[in-house]
Amino acid sequence: MSLLKTRPSLAMKISAGLSLVILLTLGTWQVDRLFWKQGLIDSRQAQAEMPPIAVPTDTVLNPDMNFRSAYAEGRYLNDQEKYLMARTRRGNVGFQLITPLEQEDGRIILVNRGWVPTDFREPDTRPESLIDGPVRVTGILRMPAEKHWAQPDNDPLKNQWFYVDVNHMAEDTGAELASPYYLELDDSPVPGGLPIGGQAKVELPNNHLEYAITWYSLALTLVVIFVLYHRRPNDDKSNGDGDQKAA
Image (cartoon, rainbow, N blue to C red):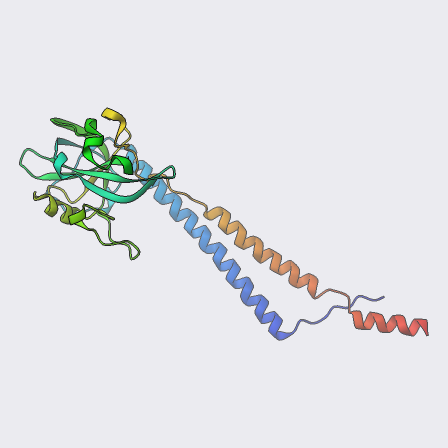
């Protein structure tokens, strides 16, 4: 029996070549995403670990300040709580509590105090969280969020907010906004244990290395299959040789 190399058809060559290019492109794209994501994580961690500054007021938004460690002082306007809906924690459904922090001049800084279970939405179910008097709170600066296409519209009348719109939240409060940022609190202990702070995602999942390995592995598999397929025995020729020898 003889082994003969079969010539791949033009269509098979083109199909295999395009598939290989696509797989290699996807793998390279994931490598680029890997370094981008790691840079983003490193930047967030560096910002969050810097000595805290006072929440900037009377300023314009600076994207470089996002996740910057900061603090604020004032009095909570507990009767003006805002509920950031559809937030989960460890598989449990709840909301994040945003409370205006009144400054000495009467203006406010919005403070995301953390996560609260749905059963504790009503303030009288968590009286210890209604802190009265001056406070100094620490956390990280956050930029106002833009509405995602899949998110519902905010509904101030029902006090249901699905993304942080600092301007409309301040308007709903009836007070002037002191800062274009809002402060997302850290996990410092609070009376009664609610809200639970530290909900900001400084650490992000970074699975791009695994994705890159997957795409490159598929590309290698395609090459191996292509080579083995076109080096397979020529069954027709082999059978013909065998018949002649038998005759």
